[in-house]
Length: 134
Image (cartoon, rainbow, N blue to C red; front, side):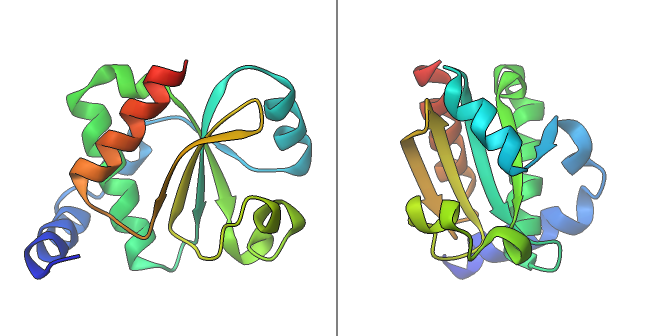
């Protein structure tokens, strides 16, 4: 990420502290994952931590995109706690090697992936791919 994008995203983190709660998020559990894989719904798995600045910036950028395009708000987000599930079989099977990873999934299959890139355009592209897969 270039310096300007980082500074802009960092400023957004402090300027928009309540925006991250602007969209619905479900908390990952193995039972929820089994349910989602068995359905045809499109979900975005968000491998994140509470202590990572990159993860926080990404949350703010997602919320900002949803506030500007309400159709994004219809997407289903599932937070996967990296500290708990980062070394799990599920993360290993999905080849998730680090926190700050977004995966668009349908029927247990990957549609799109974004790793450690808290950039507005890339996040919107990922959410556009999720919308197109519905």
